Structures are given as C-alpha cells and as structure tokens.
Length: 194
Figure (cartoon, one colour):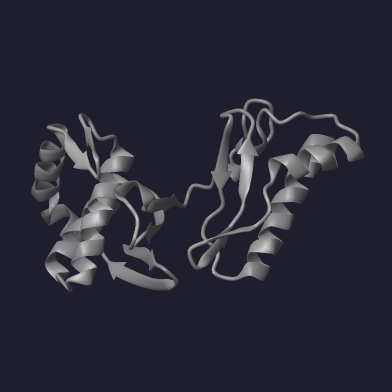
C-alpha cells in the first residue's frame, strides 16, 4: 500500500508493503500496549487514547523520523497508521503543530453514503422542502467561504445531523478550492430544495 503524506505543500508517497505489515504486527501490539497505559499528548495526559489519537501519535513520530531521515522508524510508524486506520487516503502532517493537528483523511467519503431519510450523510438533518430563496440563504449559512490554512485552502460544511462543522480536504490551489466549495454549495442547495 502507498501512504500519501502531505507536509506543507509537499506530497510524499510512502510504500508500506503488505508483507511488512504482517511482520510488524508484534511491534504494533507493543505500541498499543504502551498507549493502553496512557500517553502524554503535548500538555495533557490522556488515560486511554482512542484509535484516531493513537494514529496521530504515530504520525507525530513519523514526522520526527522524516525530519531525522530515520527510515526504519518512519516505515514502522507509517505501517502502524496503515494497519490501524483502514481506508486511510492521506495523512497531513503539521510541522509546527501539536499532535492533534495532524489530519487523517479516509477514502470512505460520507457524502456518498445515504442516510435513513435518503439524503447523503453530509446533508442529513438539513431542512428540506424550502423555497429556492430560503434554500439559498440556508446553504450560504451551511457552507463556509474558502479559507487559507497554512499553505493550503479549505472550506467547511455544517452537518446538521451531527451538529458539527466538517472541513474539506486540504486543497493546494485557491481556484480549485473555490470550485469545490461551489459544488458543495449547489449540492446543499439542491438537497434543501428537494
């Protein structure tokens, strides 16, 4: 498997072969056993790191390994992340950030999975049956403007069902980010008009 790692605007493709993953399972189990005892995450002690935080801890170690050109540790950390986060697409490392600033993007995009009311999950819970003017006003509230984060661009879409803002993946080009944001806006508008 290839793990795509983004540091600032640089893309690295790390090869993590399946046979390597099989051989490293004992090492991964020891990492999990260490984290089962709790872990210092920047300024806070976390008694029981969840799977996402464990992957972010490994991502932080991967960043250090890449900076120090420690290929063995880097491969082990990349392998741990691939083994513990099925469907990982990209790993965005934050060189100046904290452990929780590392972003893990998965391939399984929720926007294509229908919810109980037939709407894609990203639109679940959004008001429906609105007039075009009402839908346009609500979509403007639900889809943020494009914003810059480091050297990349993002936008956010409000998930009414979960009551959280969901960020887009990192996008290197502002025009592409604007086009993707327009697509998200239209999808939300159409979902609320229907």
